[in-house]
Image (cartoon, rainbow, N blue to C red):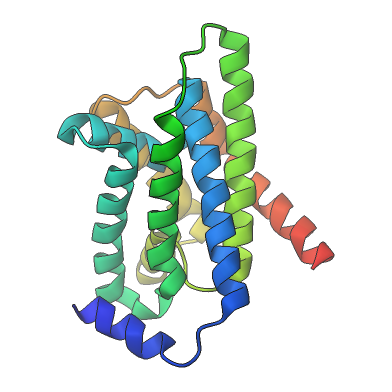
Amino acid sequence: MKIVSFLMEKNMGKLQIGKLLRVIIGSLIMGVGIAFTIWANVGSDPMTLFWIGISNTLSITVGQANILVCAIILVFVFFMDKKQIHIGSILNPIVIALTTDFMTSHMVSIDSLSMSILLCVVGLLVLALGIAIYALADYGKGAYEALVFCVSHKTKSSIGIVRTLCDITFAILGILLGATGALGTLLAIICMGTGIQFFIKKLSKNS
């Protein structure tokens, strides 16, 4: 209830439609990218891997696992540094969950390893693009990003180191919970940061 009251007070009378649309579009694209990596079945980004593990353990959809995990993280962030949270922080996991669950429910199996790898790479690129669009909206950090910033600030460690450690932790947890970690997970840990930065620079130049 405290989080809801905080968001209502923060956004009352100053809802910015342009930023809201960017949040929705960026989140939708993120959902598509995540769905592609799940479809490829050669490993997803660490947080998605964790969602898959939660999904397998609790017998819920990946989208529902996303909302559950993000809700817990946002409650933690709220009490650590509520300035990280805005309306986008709430909309982001909801849009991603709806998009991911819709797409994964209509997917067929892939028999070709090369096609799976290609689909995974495309999925990670689409995910990086979506994250960049969402980040440029500047309407509240996503749950994972907010967590990284909070831990970085509290421990006085660099964001890069904290992000890498969080990625490794969530990847291990996902694998322990039954998710398949493979090439896609390794690519995500190594390349996602660079991909996001690339798209942010490109989109910033064109805006």
